[in-house]
Length: 223
Image (cartoon, rainbow, N blue to C red; front, side, top):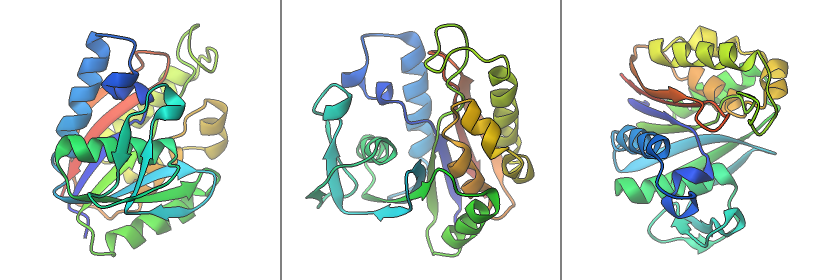
């Protein structure tokens, strides 16, 4: 049974070597992420969105495609592979937290809410105890945002933050896939997987901001 959950975003900028320089906002975000994942124990299960359903373990990759050859591994003994961004960030966080391994479950970005919840229940029944949930909010906050400004973005991410702060699985499942896609919110699928992971949570929201035009949320749920 999952007993600890860490919800984090996965911007490459969370890795110091990929950031443009000292930035108080990045430092705050990075510290919140590390605080969250250090509560997961030694072996993690992780979930993130991708183009298809894939499970990765015992593999290594690099952030080279994002500007620096920062190498990461999902386990201490790992073979080389090409990893998508959620898996790269999961591997980086694993090393920072000193955890032994992370098994990465990538779920297709067009997966319907009910199927996401079914996957979450399956993970809860798998014997895993620590779950890392990787996903960004809307990328349309403000005129300089990557996806161009959309007035719906602040309300969308405010609702996500409230759901994470209160462990409201129902509210997470109610996120409209079409709205999330329109707002460039890649976290919809992993958040809805989390919604399927049972109940009985004590939640804590550690961070919720949009410092670079993208909504980033960090939360911890403990049973």
